[in-house]
Image 1 (cartoon, helix red, strand yellow):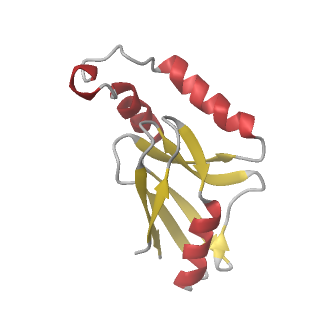
Image 2: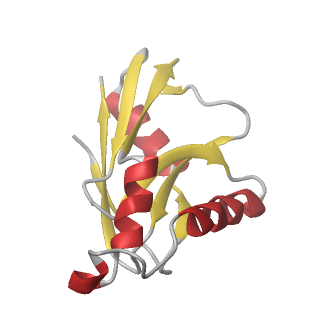
Length: 130
């Protein structure tokens, strides 16, 4: 099972990992199947969305920020990152993508994104292809 380490740079950001995931699919040799992309962290998420216009990513982060404000939660008394936990729970830790012809079957504008909510950190991304 391939794993990669992604170094995040900001407190909150979306990082396009499509090429790394696609390379893991190619190396697997699987022609038709499924690719699971999973992040084993409680304050990060994996999503599929557009990255051709960077405003989309910023809009997503801004919308989540309005939905889940910082500093309003009981867990903030422990380590001040409750909003990060809630946002990661809303988006989820993984995505499953069809594999066809030995590659990811994504739509024209779709990218696989690691979403950081509590950075900067080193994040592990697990890719499983079957």
